[in-house]
Amino acid sequence: MPNPPRQRVAALTATALLLSCTLAGCGGDSHDEDLPAQKLSWKDCQAPSRAEGGGEAPSPLPGGAEWQCATLRAPRDWAKPKGDTIDLALIRAKTSGPKDRRIGSLVFNFGGPGGSGVTTLPAFGTEYAKLRTRYDLVSFDPRGVGRSAPVECLNDPQLDYYFEQDWTPDDSAERTALLNNTKEFNAACEDNSKKMLPHVRTTDAARDMDLMRQVLGDDKLYYFGISYGTELGGVYAHLFPEHVGRAVFDAVVDPTQNSEQGSLGQAEGFQLALDNFAEDCTSKTEDCPVGDTAQDVKDRIAELLADLDRKPIPGIGQRLLTQTAATNGIAQALYSKDFWEYLVEGLQQAYDGDGRVLMLLSDSLNGRSENGEYSNITAANIAINCADDKPRYTAADVERRLPAFRAASPLFGDFLAWSMVSCTDWAVPGAADHPDVSAASSAPILVVGNTGDPATPYEGARKMVEALGPGVGVELTYKGQGHGAYGSKNSCVQKAVDGYLLNGRVPAAGTVCS
Image (cartoon, rainbow, N blue to C red; front, side):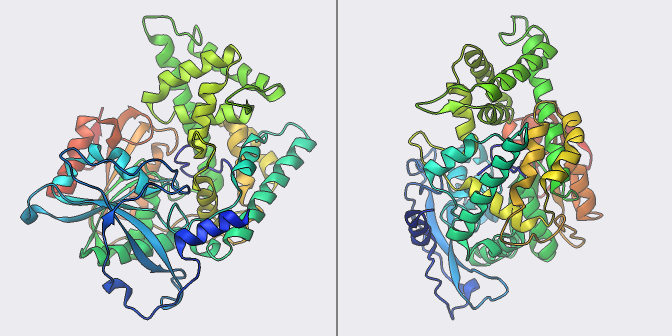
């Protein structure tokens, strides 16, 4: 669901493959250089590539500071560090404070997996202005993402068709169509990105970050991970505990869950967010325009989705708003309380036969721009998850588990249950049931959980603290809504995070912000 946390939502041409090679250096040059000793050539940033989502080059920060971009050479296969290399795209904003107060580089990963840090950091750069007083702010496109050897699967028209498919099959014909579409997607990924698919695991990205740390000139990795970025940070801490500096995990993935448990947890999380949305809308003094009671709001949404399953309504251009697109759009709006007003507007329109707003929300989740071009967020999300996750589920497995998913969420249960088949025909075996994040000798890591988080349910924060090991994870709770806590602008959360990253003050374990 956007920034697809651990979701399986989704989604070949010679042109797509050529673009991938142009961006990533698919020629596969071998090297003799000492990669940790390489020098980065920082330059003005170009406009984001299609795989990064397109758009304009990042605007200067307040005060006129320019964003700078560079590429980092890393081994394609970390088991062969002297073999072929790939280029990883980096972005930074240099510290705004005095040089003698600079701590180092603060590296961000905003989640997904599959999100482009090169485009996301500038979009939210002003939110981290205080952190920039002592750090260079740095982010990157992880391997397989954006400009960093991007995984490519279907082309844009094929992705339009792919996202129209029914992800909640009601009969054998719909089930067969769903499984066939998934096979075609996975086969296209293998055809277009065969060299990269075995090398996009989270452990590979963690090794890239340690190389990045060295090339940036830091003895320790200072890190801010959000959503999947918390899993990446946990894996880094497990592999390189002695190199962990001050680190913050926000919107925390439960590292103890396998992919089925993660999907079931998301069903519960999105249902909780829907419940909270409905309560919020109907508890206001004015009338809620999409229902008289919280249950009425949810019942009307369920009726809308059932109607769309039978007959889609006009969306954008020639595209129709299907049940799947509407479910995606609703999920996207539940990521942040700031989006709830758009959900109200989208539902009102849809009840009147106009699917434009819900489709815009769905397009945002799927990485589709207004000109019909897709970023590679879906391809990268599936490639990384399938390379990481060992379980492979059949249609029979899903059908056995449907009652549990429906109990967790009448609205999202079927959708998230059937998304588990995304990796069934994947070309590369998954690495493990769940990531290992044990990091007994690491410096303290501040772990921030949000009680109303739909995509990474609150319980994951406690599980991460336990898995990191005694004396490492320090739990902070935010009683709020939406995906993540720091971006909510809650002063208590920001004071705790800033105090640790800027001054090394570790808040008391169990601190609660509301």
